Length: 440
Image 1: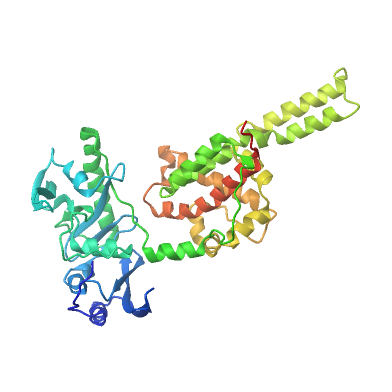
Image 2: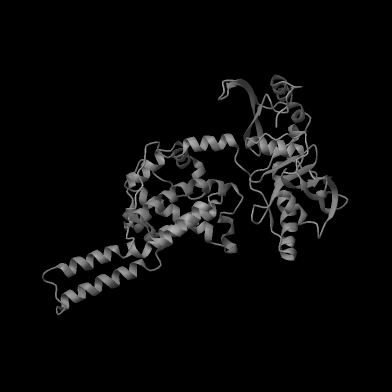
């Protein structure tokens, strides 16, 4: 929502950022109608990194400057902010379905907790705007519509330029911890997780009301950068026909993965299960070929003890080799559906993936490095890496928990890069096993 008359210019906003030692840059541009406009991009700190936020000359700049957003910092992995000076933490929350409107979710707290503040909606009806979850002499914990600072920082980074000077019942619902002494982002994150896990688990057990902290959303600018750096669909005309049909079970797993792209753990494991579906086919492929060649030999006879011994040996040897060797079965699938050159070409054609697999960041999930200059050995390395990551997802033993890839962590963000590669391989497996479609 924009103001007709600007009481503050974009240049003044830039000066405001400069005075608060916030790195920024002023841009001049032209919209699709040919009208000139200006905007400022500034760097907002999140742990040891930054998010880029854009503010335009027709935004309500005065309202933004009247907030205390310069005293806030982001918390890694969560859609959350904290302030040492203001002694507070604020984090967006979501219900288990991640779909309920804020007002509905907020009302679900009413049977247990006390209302601190109320507001009047568009129809003149009172509704809760803040609900107390806990308080003592040290700090207060509540849920309610987010603060103006949160509305600005969270919305603007996504390109949603809400008017924070007006009450908006569609503001996001946040968990607020106030009057808490914190000096670092690590302390803020630690306290946020401790408090939310304690209260939200009790809610889940006693009320069947599932509430979680919202994971940190990628800024609009970062999403655009990733989109440009990843593989993009071709602009060329396509011709889709009813030529092939695909195996139902792996395709069902494929759609599940695609529908859960925002959860890299679910997506990765579902794509892995696509490959796993074909283990029996490719693990016995070599034995089948040996048996087929043996039987096709003109000298073969069921009455020959020598040939029957060879047949029995082929069957029993291959079965013994494949039992329990899941990593080997994965390798058998990959080498049958894709070449090393295919994998190298896929990774190196994306600047984002090429940079990731060439960077030390890729070591965070597996020590198996992918040799992008070695198309001969890369398939075995890919198989070992995928299997290693798969084990880190599914293993839950207490002795191995330090290795596990957990939701809403930096490692889950790294996993997003691995999802691109395993999706590419899952597609290859489904295509390789397709057959001519039969509609009869």
